[in-house]
Length: 89
Image 1 (cartoon, helix red, strand yellow):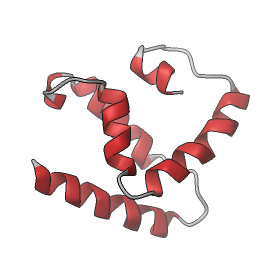
Image 2 (cartoon, one colour):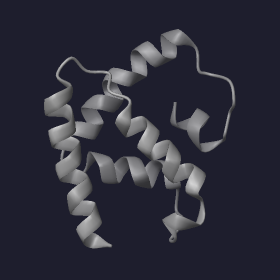
Image 3 (cartoon, one colour):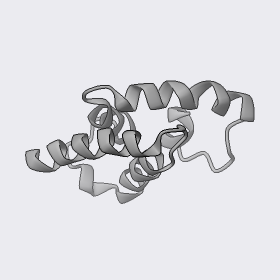
Image 4 (cartoon, helix red, strand yellow):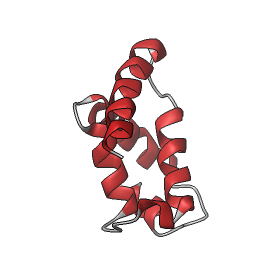
């Protein structure tokens, strides 16, 4: 799925791929440093992550699309990671 995101593929990935990847992506995001890892994966090696806003929009879209049953706990975890990232800027 990261390939679809990074290379700007306009078509949606196959349903079976989404079904397999989304739980893995959620597990990665809720781990410590998961949000920062997602930013690095999507924004590639660009030093200035503000240079390509479409990639940052993709990061936000991935984070805000909740695919878990306990959305409140998910957001609590994700928000704490985003706050830590914001303090680094």
